[in-house]
Image 1 (spheres, each protein chain N blue to C red):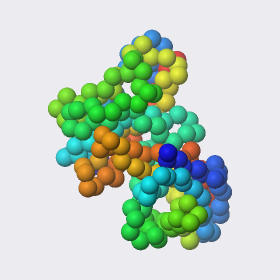
Image 2: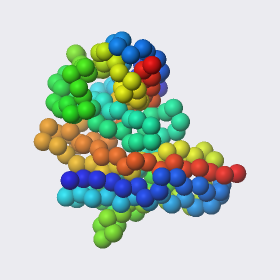
Image 3: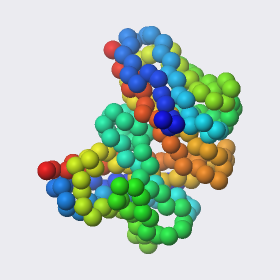
Image 4: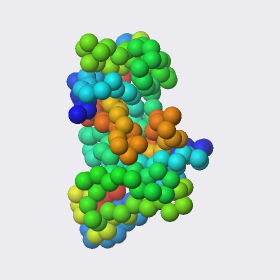
Length: 114
Length: 116
């Protein structure tokens, strides 16, 4: 399967713990996006990378959130000192580049903070 | 400002009957519009997209959508529902940011139930 993959698929953690999620985009896609989706809502944009450069961060991304894409391939999203309000599905998407902007989504990581 | 309104949060149809999922958009520019489908515990899958070519867009699994500028609508239809169509459907409007990112604004979703 050559689609977007995410790991883990599910994560249960206690409030105050740190968690890290990984996203592997489709090979050769230079654009990568993170979204958050809460129950009954559509996804909301968190942050965007073009190659290794993080070009945009949403106001939803508090100081406890950090994302990296060190070599322009896979990306990680870390949440420090998790809160119950962080419980959500975290989706990653990738797209090829300028002329082909359709975003392809991964299966998501579902986070539950107890 | 760009926004999307999905007019029904839930739609229930019988297998073999037509499907209509309604979507209205607001956009300052000529929009690009998408429909995505999300099956339980799965990621979002692109059904179809409109990018200012033909106003009737055909997608996967027999779905199609018609862009109507005068009505600012982009409704999704399928002639005959199948049990496997049961899922959450999202209408999405898209525009370019200064950073080069194509920003996606999602509707709140329509849950389609298909009764046997």
